[in-house]
Amino acid sequence: MGRKTLAELETLAARAFVRSKTSDANARSVVRALVAAEADGLSSHGLSRLAAYCDQAIAGKVDGFATPKVARQKPSVIAVDAASGFAFPALDAGLSAVVPAARETGLVAVAIGRSHHFGVAGHAVERLADAGLVGIAFGNSPAAIAPWGGAKPLFGTNPIAFAWPRTGRHSLVIDLSLSKVARGRIMVAAQKGEAIPEGLALDAEGRPTTDAKAALAGTMIPMGDAKGAALVLMVELLAVALTGSNFGWEASSFFDAKGPPPHVGQLLVAFDPGAFTPHAKARAEVAFRAIAGQAGARLPGERRFKLRAKAHAEGVEVPDALLAEIERRAG
Image (cartoon, rainbow, N blue to C red; front, side):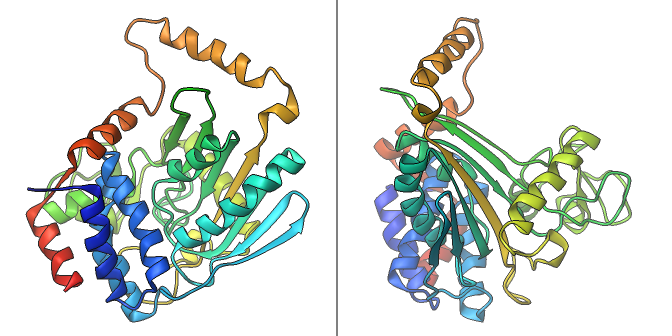
């Protein structure tokens, strides 16, 4: 394992993207997201994605030079066309537009279409909360979960994220995949040749498996079983039907450079809590204190913030093989 500062990783990874048919501005947007995931201890959404992203840009599956197009369709509806590019520049453009709009109208939705993998969903809503807004995000992904009772994957693992602003403290951030674990963790296990715990996935024949590669070829099990499958469908409709994007079974893989752009979608909703009641944030603190008052209890996301602080102070460790791959691509 090699230890690098976050700034060193951003510089190195950005060079790799620029050498992979990606504009400097887009490269920096993508790299900020990947390195931020590393800092938060979420390596499955971090630099392990770099090789696949770069290969997709080189192949044209992702347009590394795309410029997102932002349109305010209604006072409370903003549409962003990711233009077959990376999701992160589209998120940057959408969030820049949604913050002032939410302060003006009290509630705004931003629909991002023709998009790509949007990484750690919690980071997008955290940015809204840091601006004083309540944020919710929904995103779909390539087919990995079968409808309940079925055996063929149709829908993605479809993350949901939520953030609530707090004064003088880190925002509350809730970020979860609707599969029992994020598919990226299965991907990392497959890359390392490691087994996965039972109960997370089925193979292509619908049998329980601990083989990570067989799990990637089969289906993920949704959290909450039938209830989770219903939530998967809800997110699919919000992220796809409202953005004009591809359903999970229509989307190409995030993990290879084959096929057309995945063209998945994301929907973010921002609320100005003060527009609903001046007491919104104070009332939320009552709940947070009640949780903190129980021995052993903690708010979601606290571990992530501790890891982030440590990463900013000490850097992060990157597996030697991954670091060598990034350095090779950076030239």
